[in-house]
Structures are given as C-alpha cells and as structure tokens.
Length: 251
Image (cartoon, rainbow, N blue to C red):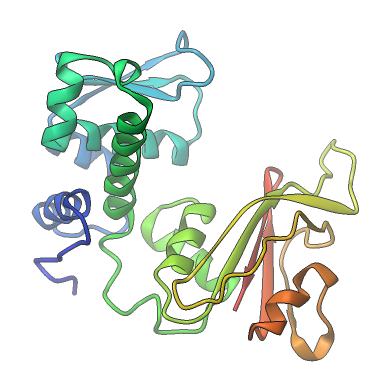
C-alpha cells in the first residue's frame, strides 16, 4: 500500500506528491481526476501552431490542447500545464504574462519544473522499492508502463533514472518497415543512465535489427556499438521497437 506522505527532492515534486496523497495514490493515474482536482477545464483546438501541443489560460482556468494528439501525449500536456497552474510561482507569473514573454532561462526553469510535476504525478504512486525489486528488463519496463498508464518511453526513463543498479538506455529512430524503407542502422536520439552507472559516450547509431522484442547476454556476443557498455560492467541488453522509435535498455 502506498504511504500517505512522500517527500520529493524539490518543491515541484513535493507539490505533486501532495496532490497524489489527496487522490489516494491511484494506479494507473486518472488524469481527468487530476485535472478536476486542480479546477481546470479542457478544450481541444485544431488551430494551435503545430509545434505547440498545449497552452494554459490561467485567467480562464482552461488547458487548450492541440487536436489529434495521442492519449499519452495529451495526458502529459494536461499534467504539465496543470503543473504550471498548481505551482504558485508559475501561476503568478503566467497570470501577468505568457511563457513566451519570459527570458529564456526563466522559461526553461518553468518548463523543467512543470515536467517534474507531471512525471511525479504519473509515477509517484509506484510502491517504494518496486523499481529495484527485480532486475531491469524490457518486460519490466512494459509492466511499469501498464501499471502507471504511461508510455513505454516515459516508463523506460523512470525505471533507468530511479534504478540503484548500473542501467543505461538509448532512444533511437525507427528501424523502418510498415511503408518505410528498412535501414541497416538507426540514429540515436538521446541516452540516459542511472546515477550509479558509469558515464559512457552515447553511440551515434545502432543496428536496426532490433525490430520488436530481442535480448542478448554477454555469452552470445554484443553488437559493436554496445561493446562499450559491456566494458564498463553491463551484462545484458534488450530492445523494443515501434513504428516511431527503437529503445535499447542495457544493464
């Protein structure tokens, strides 16, 4: 059973945990219930610029979302914009001006805090110790995504960054297929690691063979691009691919 009080590492995390405590730490998170708790309405607008997925009207207490977003993207926008409204400093600033009127460093700070608020709302109900209760694996990431209602990519980031084991992750472009021309390699978009994992350079490309589920151990040989992880202590890797990206987990 989730505790009634959890303490975060920042004011944004504390605020999110306080909301979750009021809602009973639901799993998976009911984003509509969060929005109603925050006192915000929701509108969809197909006229927003393509680069803007959502905006908050503080005065009207309305979140306006780009029409046509997928479920995971839409829910993240609701939680993110909800953070802007719920965090007192954000609400005070955005009541007087728009985010586009702020200087770049202040805007980056507000965006990072709203993302933290949204992420803790999504994963803050996960029981203490769950992340480290079993070895990392693609199946474990999928279980976390199912438990929380998060996207696979978001669950991957949470599991890696909260892990007490050395764990790394690479998020790459799609391997192709489904109308796209298949490729031998895919570009790495970005990577991240657990705090105890040694830092290593992210490869620029990895093999496109990881289309779907696959795993390997050191005894079966490692792809050249991943050998650096084996050199710093990784003993296995797994990958999961969709039509939009390929994720590689190393542990």
